[in-house]
Image (cartoon, rainbow, N blue to C red; front, side):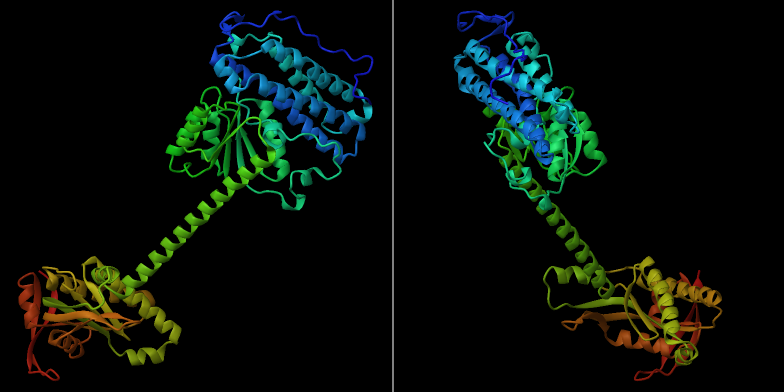
Length: 556
């Protein structure tokens, strides 16, 4: 097939425009002027929409033609693509931003020069669609129709059939969606294309991209083209027709990147971006703004609002892909950083929990603040020891695992009782349990708190015995007075108490009776009339003088 349209080809002919070039301020149509910067910017934007669709669908069809080895279709598509490239160059030159700003616009020349390549687009797309072999390739006929429709829409604009005054009111979207813009925009068609299409983009099919991308554009054709192209690259795509719908999608499922159009009905791209960046759940999702609005103000506004990148249309597909990959890589790094921070926080929480299992909260806080040696004197506290009676026989009676299981459950219950009464568990030694009131945090009613906790420990043991049908018994001893508390050890450190008060409390337990709470006179005096006590008498204490002791009965 030659480059010259064959007989039967019916070219479009343009209705005559004014013969003379309109001067600055002369109406093109009612309500539109050459020096109207906003209107001409919107005209440039509007013309790019169908033009990008022509190039985008052509590129996708060229890929399909290569896959089906359709030489005739590929030849015609190259001609359409070449014509599209000519139209793009004409548009970029005639409506360059500097020409719009200075009013040096020659719309008549632009229109005249665009007619011929537009006729080529429509003519070759019609001829290709009439070939039965070509029409049999899946999807080709529909895409050729879309190319022809986009070309006719472009004709309607340059012939003045669409009023420029309607452009401001009409949703002439900034079209992030065309495949021409998003993937193959301004790459010239090679004279030969023997390599696979993915190789042409520098992408191997075995190295397809990954990522979840939300495509936001109010033009359905643009969304379709960009989605198809990105899906072919390996991305998972969802679409939204406006900002409100995009925000709904973002709240329903996670995305790695948003490709966001600027000019849209209901909620435009700028406001959508602002909403995302003020939402703590969405602010870290990267956004690339795609638009035909290439003014500096738009770029600055998008970046200031938090956009990851800004790509004006038309754009180089390799650059776009690189920017998408760069944005996704930043997102992955941020996700990894957040995951690492969460893991670090989790590990820190575990470490602190383990530390608190060994040390009192106040002591752990001092260690974390950098204190190395911690030794304190406490003038008043109450120390409690509890010991299981006949534990040697119990160990012989049960298996090791059963013994440890029962002991762990009982002492865990003692831990909860101590915590309830703001007492500090110091340690367990075999079957012996030690706790204190008033250390390391002052507790005015330390004796009363220890007395109440000790009574609850006895009651808990009775319930424990009934549950497991066993007959464990416990002795509890209490004493009040001054102690020294501090950290011992460097690697396997522990918080412990020293002093005569601790020794005598231990003797109260070891010289006590099963199921009884034995206390010294110093503790009884601190309890006052809040608890009932019974005098046991004077008993011999190892390594100490005989001592008057009491049994704790119950609260008054």
